[in-house]
Structure formats: C-alpha cells, structure tokens
Image (cartoon, rainbow, N blue to C red; front, top):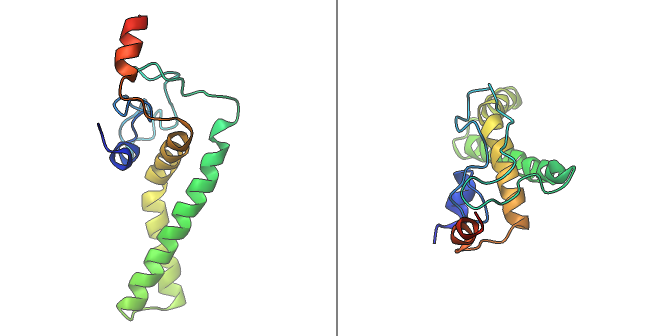
Length: 129
C-alpha cells in the first residue's frame, strides 16, 4: 500500500496511488503544464469530476503559500537577518521558485481529500476492460 502523503507529493492518482495526475511530469517545463488526463491510466478514476471541481484547490494553494511565507520569515528571524526589504525579496524568490509545484500539489491534495484510496482499484479496472 503506497503511502498517502508520498503519493500526493509525487502527484499520483488518489484512488490507486500509481497513475499520474498530470500529463507533463516535469514541474518546471511549461509546455502542457496545466494538462491533466481525463482518467487515470492505471485504475480509470475520472479526474474531471465536475465543472469547477479544482476551484477548491485554490484554498489549498493559499494555505501552502502562507506556509512558505511563514517559513521564510521564521528562517530570517532565527538567523537574525530580518529586514522588511530582504524579507520581501526572499519571499518573492521563494514563491516564484515553488509556484509550479504548489499549483500541482494543491490539485493533488484537493482530489486526494475527495477520492478514497482503493487498494484493488487497478484490479477492478482491469476486470472491467
């Protein structure tokens, strides 16, 4: 049984935890960046659940962005290098560097909250085909 957190971070299907959520597996390659398959290639789980389904991922993205901001602030405070100018620069750089992954992992978290893991999903899908 694949670990739920690992499968979320690796952007895998929440039902089987093996299929890919995104067509483009490279985080920093922008061609086809937003493209998701309609179904999981391993278990057949529908990734287009309903219109506007992934709007909820914006709330997850917001929470992750706040966590990054707090992490930058905390690191600067711990190392006693805090100035507002440096904070804004480092924060901007951190957010720009993590933006593509945050976008994808937000969708991964959101769908994983809605779809239950089924250890026999691939087996069931193969029997249907």
